[in-house]
Length: 581
Image 1: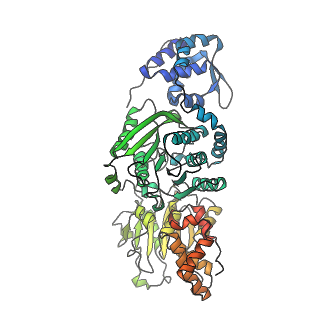
Image 2: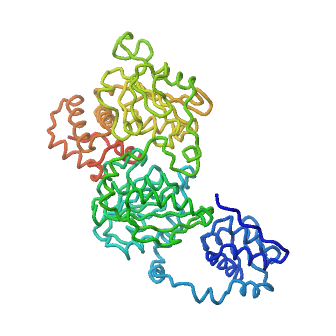
Image 3: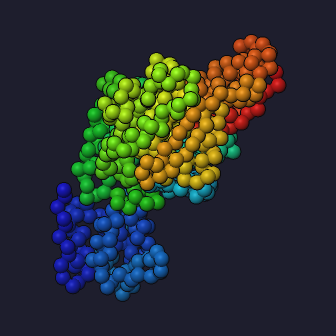
């Protein structure tokens, strides 16, 4: 823990400010810059933090030291300036003329001025983007920062004809970079379905070569993004665990292991160098060579604890980096965030026995249902999720499946080989997308899924209808809110048999039950079966492949897997009508 700085003493604000600045030693220049700005015009607290890169705590201490010499104006968001009669004294304190004479010129200043139109365009996109989710450590970069990143990337690397991987992209770096360099293509992987849909639709509108894939990076990089990129950009959660995980997934996305680079945005407050060291060690643990660090490169709307700013690091992998990727640096309870239920401070308690009993009971097939006799029917065939301990009486005999492996690859075939297989899964820490992905990943007679009671798919009737409609060709859903306790809900999913006379239902069932297969192959086989069973028509593989390529909303999706597509893309695919053959 860093020692508290002594509070300035005395009644003279000028002396108090001088003492505070002196307390920062050689690092006091940013405080002098704040004083200089306050002698020029009014500034809000947020602007002072963002312009200086100092933490909110430090800026507030400086404003407090100025006492009666500080003029405050405005209502909701006040602005501050130094009283005009006192400005000369404070300019002398901060050595105002020397500050101005020694400020380094911005090497990107001319390029940024020329890109003013792109900055205005990005400002509109940032304003229209989904609201940041605090639990996912979302803090939006300023529009100037998104363009500045793109300008710097173009000035540093050969981007034309290359492929960029954005490991998380709430900042819309992909849009800015591809807008600036149209010959650049990009892949965006993110856990937030809203961001994926927004970027996907804006890229289509602007004619940019950007594809979006869903990923909870704790479970791995999507297969469609593995080995795809020449350059990786990431602005991860600012924890050592989060930075290491996002860097590791970015490495898995590089196709050029010799010349590829990773560009990382990371910042920490000036009072917490030990935290910065932990993160830098996380990169060193991956044997990454740091080729450059650009201080205070990024600016944010928020993140005031770290000065609304972060540095830009450029890393290059070494020969010792690649063997480390064989490790699996992620799990459902890997704490990578700084806020919310999956933050480093969250406890992740084991589920109570009563909750486990209720979940297991919901997974059992009621008497008289199913394809096997009651005497042959197991209570629960398989369980997944960290809150379901091995050996619990209600789960006796159930096979244990790793939740990450289940979502990324599906359950092992032998585990759910019985037609009456049942699954219970603990998704109580679901940040939102796990529920749909589990319904896609698991083919069972019955599922019981424990989710937060405020889960976005359950919070209102519209959300429930949307999820139920999306998987209707595979499962019938029942939503049990506030069950078995107020903070939980149980979603029961019962397998359905599609109408053999309905070719569209047969195709939808085929797509949803093979969510881990390559979409083009799965769709082709589903068409062949539907044509045969519902129409009595024989369809060759070549003919079916040609039909799929004709009716696909985006042919580029056919090489991907359904489980890694954003939700809006899955919805579009399932809405494609059965074609004329």
